Length: 99
Image (tube, rainbow, N blue to C red; front, side, top):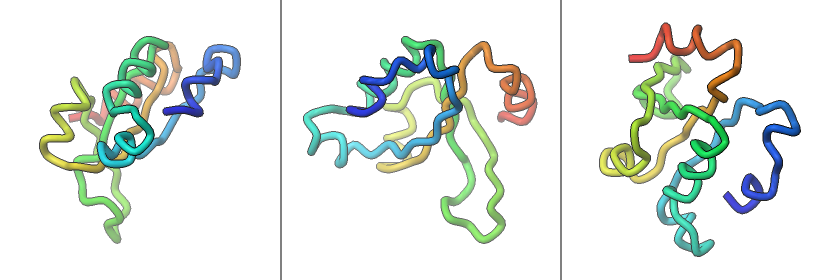
């Protein structure tokens, strides 16, 4: 979060982001997952997580759009997100496979 909050994402082309969300890690940095969520959504990003097992041998990434980081944290104390800007041309393909 600390690094992302200093980057002008729109000025560098609103890249697709892949990040780890962990309440414990954020707490050590005097921050929280909601700070990251607020930052990304405030800059026009939509966030997704993998409903399949992390580090699985099949390496299948089945996405679900995240409505709230807090909802996901109740299921998994640590998870990865894929964040894509709402104007990214690749978003429709991702939404087509989202569950």
